[in-house]
Amino acid sequence: MRQLIFILSVTAVCLGCDPLANPVSGRLSFSADTISFDTVFSSAGSATLEFRAVNIEREPLLIDRIWLGGGKDSPFRLNINGMPGTEARNIVLARNDSLFVFVMVTIDPTGEDSPVAVIDSVNFMSGNYTGRVILEAWGQDIWIIDKDIHSDASWNEGKPYVIKGSLFIDTLASLTLNPGTRVYLHRGGSVIVAGSLHSSGSADKRVIIATDRLEYVYKDVPGRWKGICFLDCSKNNNIDFTEIRNAEIAVKMTGNGASVPDLVMNGTMLMHSSVASLAAENADVFAVNCLFAHSGFSTVSLTEGVSYAFVHCTVAGRWEYGFRSEPAMFIGRGNGTLPAVSVVNSIITGNLENELYVDASASDAALLLKADSSLIKVDTIGSSWYSRSLFRNVMTGSSARFIDEASYDYRPDTLSPLLDRAGRSEAILWPYDIRNKPRPTGPGSDIGAYERQPGERKKQ
Image (cartoon, rainbow, N blue to C red; front, side):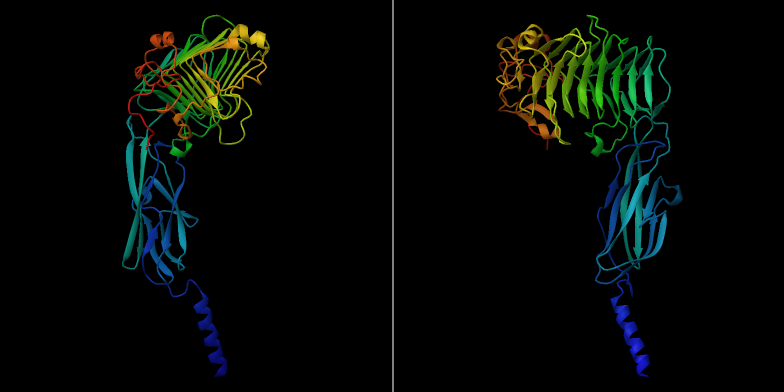
């Protein structure tokens, strides 16, 4: 009898110690009431998102059933506590414990140009208690590009173009990107131009060339694809009102030393590059109203060449992924001679002491580099290439004072030294800024790609 009582006592104690013993029905709390996916390409899987279901009762909780509302026909897929499927039953959660639900979505093509909304829910039942988490996603049909371009082609607004590998534009061919065109590249992809590229966006319908990961967290992530590479046989290229981001080198230009511009850019943003926004060698490049920002090495690198001209441009060196050893703009000889570089009404700035470096003696630099009515962060005393004849009406020690550089907002704030300081001649030639906003709005035009508009402030 004593032995039986002992066994029963031990059993009772063990049951009392078991955190999953005697589960009850009750309430669940969820880490999110809605799981929202950014735009998902049709036939391509999304990133995996997750949420947690938490037992908020004082005792172990029995979840009788967890199920996907659309069942097997749903575009969403679940993994519940490590088990894939559309349904799970009889799951016990200890007090204050939680289970993870992972969600993915794959959307079938619809034939529509515009994104299509897809909605479902993950449902929970514990006795008479119920709960649910809404799932929502936008599906976007795409044009998959898997062939090179050997004759003239034109891409348009509507379905985005997704390049899975590398796209080659042949010598006698040209590719035109009309206003509103969106081009996305898979990891490691590239565009190689032997012929011509005409990216002809507008201020209200920019051309977008970026990573194919459309989740918001990837918007400013660098190095997702290789970039656009112009070969030395390429000619007559223009990139207007275009945003190129997430590359290793957004634009790499190798010229042939001709005196006609290999590339003209207007109203363009080259940002979030792991190496450089623009790397040009032996080329002729003209850029106006352009933004070059957030690169891991020199944001703009210019070697050899005939002429490089920057008018009302903003070159901003900022890099939070590690120490950036190279200046925002580098000018060097390469394997040839020092190029002629003109910087007018422009900004070259960043968090280094010197954001402009010229690989030349002061006498050689004085012959080929001219800067006028600009803000250039440079140590004029410690830079061996510097001479007073290089700069005219140039501020060298001032902070640019952007509205919110941490959020890549390079508009000047109300106290910025950039305001009303630009030279008149080029401002008259270019009376609109990178957004096609009018300049000037004050007594004079502002230095850089952005003209401050009345009442502008930090985005909330």
